[in-house]
Length: 477
Ligand code: DUC
Ligand code: ZN
Ligand code: ZN
Ligand code: ZN
Image 1: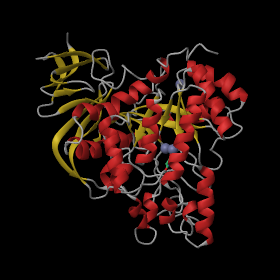
Image 2 (image 1 turned 180 degrees about the vertical axis):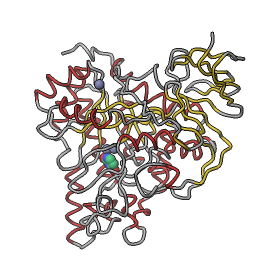
Image 3 (image 1 turned 135 degrees about the horizontal axis):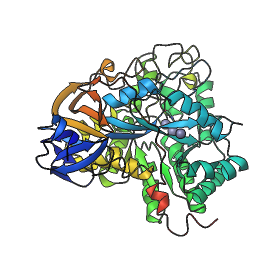
Image 4 (image 1 turned 45 degrees about the vertical axis):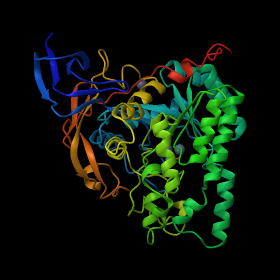
């Protein structure tokens, strides 16, 4: 066979295997894995490089409304550009339902935002904020059948949070349809109470963001979410776990037999609440929820990645400019932490950080790296085996990694819309020197090299977690 492209002399890494092989690509798919593939229009020399599935970041916020006068720093163009430079070939972003809005209407808006702007492939999770009988009973089943197979619910944030009975109804609808539910676990009432108490003391600097969202508020909500999921026998993903106590809740629920996926993020490995204590308003750069904790929590999250409590390592990229009236330091945000938009950029730094701090420092092996950054995302969100692996028939979504490359991270090289990175000056070893999406090289040596914006919208199958949920998950009415 003559290939469109062949990647030669590299070391292929999947979630289970590491082996020397050439990779033949034809019509955007992997067509051969063998030695000495020579017949191709283009030969890419991967000597000394790892040939890995492109990163799949299943937790990315782009172009979302974020409060009056606040503008998210990335739209689908800049966000997917930055993602590609950081080694990703697919991102899963959020489609936010406004109260009173149908999911279809929300989807129409988000498809319009993404259409023709994406450099890599994208798909949407549905954020359910208004779980009416119509939404859950009529819309959701039809949308799941159309390939919108995951939803997110919030236990915190005014205007987004659901009550426990609403969460139960949403989980129950998810169980009937096979949708996978992601849950943001923090106790809103406790947080609001603590905000009021700190406010009364005049404690309104960015550092108090962390103080008002303590570990116990996350642990309690995690326990509650898992209990609600157990009550209606529905699998869930606990997203952005920041500490040991929340992690232990996942472990215990699994021991009771629940089907749960766990996710953590770079900020919980690399930052602490002390970063929010930075001089004056600098701390605003690190305001995200749940907030970064302490060194012990960092160790716990590493253990969770190493030992398999966490299946997913995602960025929770949610970028705002720092020195900007539409960003972190908006008029009200300068005066009170509660008006600082929550979120930090990280779609480009997720993979280099885990490669450098995890693989190169011997905490995890290459296969675990691929599992938690790509393969598990594909399996859990219904993209496998088209995405998330190097196998014949899979999309040729490939990242070539140079393990010897040493890079000092700067904001400029990340090509996102934010004016800072929390990881400025961090030295990393290992870099994705080429990223291909369906056989087309999108990023190379830190530069975007395809301006076509050829990313596609991905309709997905059911999650591995809900598909195999046993006990009549799909048929029990
Ligand atoms: N918290 C969220 O829940 N979402 C986006 C960013 C953040 O900090
Ligand atoms: Zn969240
Ligand atoms: Zn998020
Ligand atoms: Zn579509």
